Length: 551
Ligand code: HEM
Image (cartoon, rainbow, N blue to C red):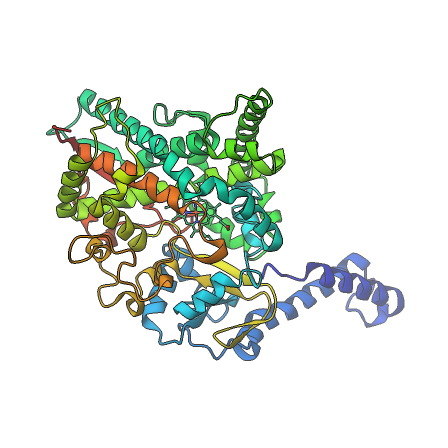
């Protein structure tokens, strides 16, 4: 519906209103018709005819996709929108993927019966992931995430995307990620020490157990890591949660109902109109975007001055970009905004789910602790650092983190738009069709993972001899979509995995976690956000933690 033909309808209505009022006033209902009144009547009539076509006639009787299988529609005019917006991101699509017989694509109707095509089989997913000039990012994303992401790599398309990706790849090369391990470990140590200090001073704790919202701590750690690794500057969110940047991102990533309503509205009316409605949330987002932009620009200028003095030896991502001198200042601001947003919330959500699953599977928690203590130096020993090989050689930790990313992908679904008339698995797909990639659904698809697909089993990532199994037993690489595949896969996947492993290792090595509310041991009792960018526990994950001495 966001493709409401405002201009043609308005132009046509103005023309007809002028013609009628001037030349044929006698056929109008009013004895003294005005141009404005006639214009609004004609506009409303045209819009109603268009809406009837778009909402009722086209999807039900004319769309070339109407013969594809799909769920029953809960509403004759609003498809399954009510369900989609009341459940976690991607949850209904994941269920339909399991329950509706289909050959790799199915259709459902969303808000105002707008068509959505879900691709599920490896072949269909390969088409979406590799034909990235045909399947592009939907325009609405610019208005949903664009303010905070900036017009960087996530939102670019076509040749512009190719150009940006080529320039940025060196900063994410394996060698460079390996160089960043000391940064990841330093921050993992800092957040562990800060929590230890609080626990030691916590007079309200019961039986040595202190209470934390682990999601909040993961977010603070992830913000410090991404700012340090991407910008080369420590903004101190672990030390102080009230630093301006941390407060800013807290507002941005808060999974509010209003965010969800706005996302819906942006699918109905042009996104820029929704963004300029002068309400508190919009003003806060605008202020947040300005704060983040100014922060990035300040750091870039400092680096540029260092480069001019031939003193730029830092290893952060921005320094690599500044040294390359291939990206203009505004372009670097955009990319930095992209990295801070894309690389902050996602990793923190992954870490949060990891701690939750350790509480649900205490046996795994104990095994991980034993492996960490055997393989890594204690965060207490200040002069020790770790290298990538230390983490790579920990099969249990890697298996556990892989399974977290499979079972709880921080980004549970993504979307594309057909840029032209095209096909998927031979089915005709008209231009502008919205495609849904059901990441959680595919990651738990029995066709690709076998009968235990919807069970949390880190063992699947290890061979019988306890060695790493890189496929997890999936029949195709398209079974695991957490970082997507092809030319638009996550550029920061290596970064994210390494950071996540370091923080999880430091926490499980030092602390023992249990859930504050035992009811949450059943994951059905954990409400997952529907309105935020990612799939995170709506009310955080509240744990009770105690220090396990000896490391
Ligand atoms: C566990 C953590 C992460 C997850 C689950 C994740 C997931 C994803 C996914 C699914 C995409 C594809 C989105 C789409 O095409 O619709 C993506 C793209 C992207 N991610 Fe990540 N991400 C994570 C961490 C990071 C980090 C740490 C960074 C940067 C430091 C980052 C930067 C990006 C960028 C720039 C893109 C756009 C790539 C392109 O279109 O060429 N991500 N990520």
